[in-house]
Image (tube, rainbow, N blue to C red; front, top):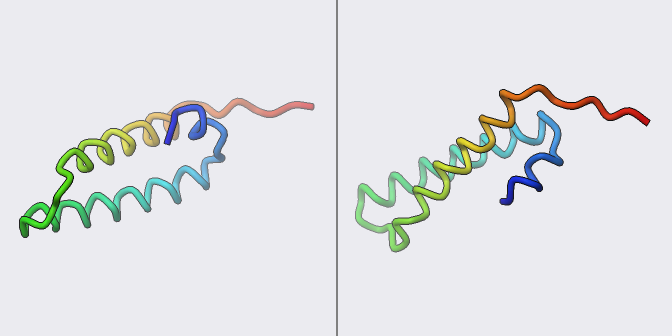
Length: 66
């Protein structure tokens, strides 16, 4: 997911996305250990996306004023 799309999400949505990414990371690790992971670059992609989400969660959220 692109950074622009991640910035549009709320903190709750980012936390849900982070949970999904961690589950995916666990699944990829299990596939790698058993030798069933055909696309090894997926672990790197998931790890970097987790870092992006955690970075956004650590930043202060701008308040939306109308």
